[in-house]
Amino acid sequence: MKITVETTVHAPIAAVWDAYTRPEDILQWNAASDDWHTTQASVELREGGTFSSRMEAKDGSFGFEFSGTYTKIVPHECLEYAFGERTAVVLFKSGAEGVSVHITFDAETEHPIEQQRDGWQAILDRFAGHVEAKL
Image 1 (cartoon, rainbow, N blue to C red):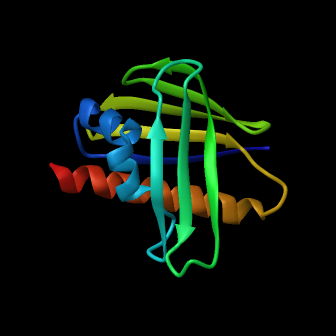
Image 2 (cartoon, rainbow, N blue to C red):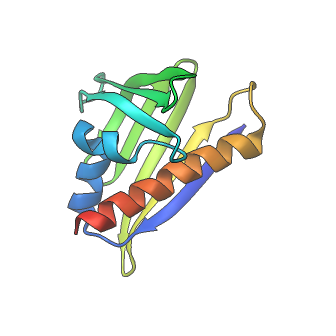
């Protein structure tokens, strides 16, 4: 099953793209809630390149690696990647209100669909807030 989350970022496309793909920015926004954070991030922004984010509960109780390989990159328009047996597509579209960011990803079977959607949406909302705060 595919899940889609989306937001609009009130910022120029270059700022949105950079914040989504730069490790120093990813460290700032990549968490679904205030009790989580990303402690390490790396990005090799090219088709066939890899990315990785180490996400951890701030109390140290749990952590995991979110990593994968870029399968398609169109700067300022699209990122596609594989992570494990799953895939995701991130679309960036400039418009009058700002940049619309849509992420469609394959659901996993361990957690309920609503929990997955809510988690990815929370991260995307934090991303939008991070970019807008930088302007």
